[in-house]
Length: 188
Image 1 (tube, rainbow, N blue to C red):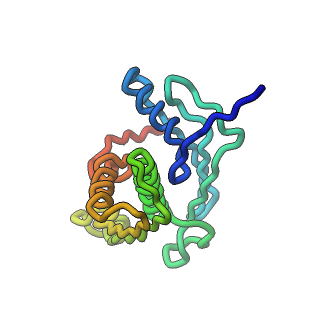
Image 2 (cartoon, rainbow, N blue to C red):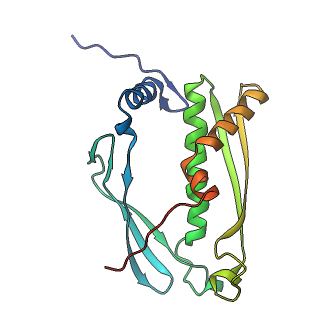
């Protein structure tokens, strides 16, 4: 005889697996260490292709991906590209939105909050004087990113506000944007 285990899902998240993961990391802190990797190839002009396949995490090399994920980058014509893909700074906005969406839905699920819909709008302000080397006083990256979101849920506003505050404190991508990250660049 086979039995079907009743899996509680909320917001598309397996809550028991989420709880098990948190408990496992609490018991064995080394399980929290991950190493994500990417490989990029320049394709000419402003175009490039980045592949993400394996990564190391939860104490082992992950082999769950049969094929790599592929992201393409390019520039719009005004920045001398062929407009075949988003540019790198647009990809940063995607990474931030994706991370915030995961943070909201996973944390909401853990707190028993049903999310019916969730949307983010992001705008990054950038001054090309820094990127083009025309002004040492202007940083080459974003000077400001504005994020607005809409969430449809039965939870009261104060609970949703605390959920958003918690997500801002724990979002890896938001943390990387708000605080300097040590990056080493080496030619091999």
